[in-house]
Amino acid sequence: METFMGVPRDKIDWYPSIDYGKCNFCMECYDFCPHDVFAKTDEIKLIVKNHHHCVVFCRACSKTCNVDALSFPEKPEVIEKIKEIRKELE
Image (cartoon, rainbow, N blue to C red; front, top):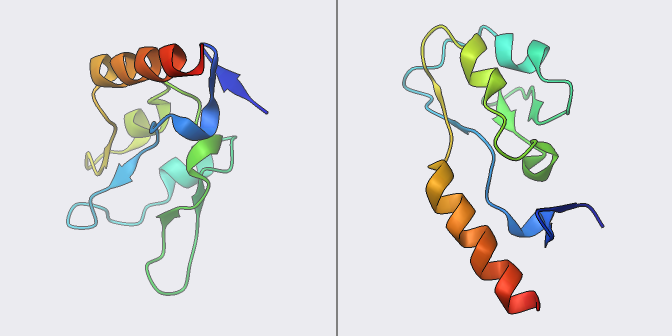
């Protein structure tokens, strides 16, 4: 099982959200990300398919987005949640 800061990765809510009102489906994020986070579909064109493949605290894909369509949770909130989960696991 993959962990981050002592917490199972699948318990950490860190992955991009796509604002489809802004996304122009340029696929820069899809082409950039080496972790297979995104997928192309026929219906929506682009989705976040593998949420927990996203590297915790990485936001590199959002830097490739020229229309600012990708967002991530707030880092301080995620850190607090990781600390809570780690205490629960002790």
